[in-house]
Image 1: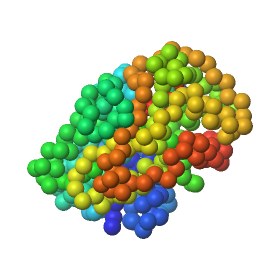
Image 2 (image 1 turned 180 degrees about the vertical axis):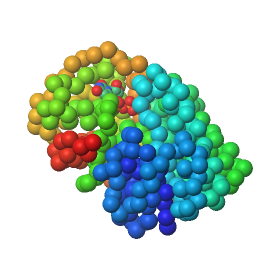
Image 3 (image 1 turned 120 degrees about the vertical axis):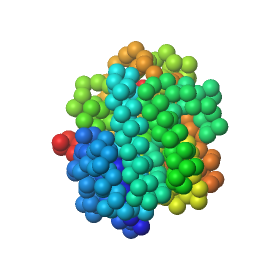
Image 4 (image 1 turned 135 degrees about the vertical axis):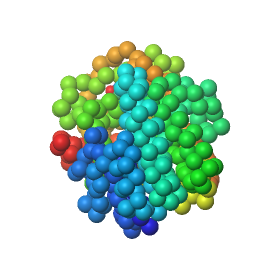
Length: 323
Ligand code: UDP
């Protein structure tokens, strides 16, 4: 089976590519390398350097490769940036995504696994967040992903596309070979580990006055290998579906920092800062549906396993992918 992976040079995409190859799939990566890294692409995969925003480029790549399925990771994914530049998010994530779908339909590729996000839910009225809750995004990033989910429903109904949208909670950790390296790092765990490595003087805690036991935000961190397992299962899903994907556990910012201190054995200086706009207090996944319907069974749920894997990767790659 041949899988065409958009954004296969990015953090989540690169690790899914590695896992697909380990399972014997043939993989073609389509990436413009603006966010991703050439060195993050498993050498067993073929790279087509291209841009989703160029309709002819993505259409001809799909027509030539004729994959059995597409995994679509390519997107901009920073909440804060989306609040400054919403047009970038709607153009890249929605318009670019639609060019991908049109190219798929023209090339008769009828199966898609899509990287969606819990940000499509906005401020949830309760946790855990299962698929029955209303989706009311509070930033253009979440809105752009929700718009693409809506487009998927119609392409499914009208063009017979079979899709699985996986709404990730907080992806974290590393495989043995590939890990998290954003050119501009905004995520909590890599930012803490940069302090442990001596590359940053301190980590900021964005808000200590939330309505949570220690006052800091609670998130559902999911190991990147468990996330990859869900993608492999989604490739063979019997029917189109939307799934929320997290472990169902919650860890506060302060607990993550404490765990990083224990695992690294290094000093980590923290500075308490104001809240970051758009951060809900608690985001915890209700993932019963994917466990029940696809048999998803996460193997690395404990936060210390997630952080240990990230730390090993950062120790081995102190300068990330070096580009
Ligand atoms: N956070 C923080 N300091 C940082 C980065 C993040 O306190 O340097 C907090 C952030 O406010 C959120 C949590 O850590 O409550 C996880 O943030 P991240 O950006 O990793 O993921 P998000 O939940 O925004 O997808």
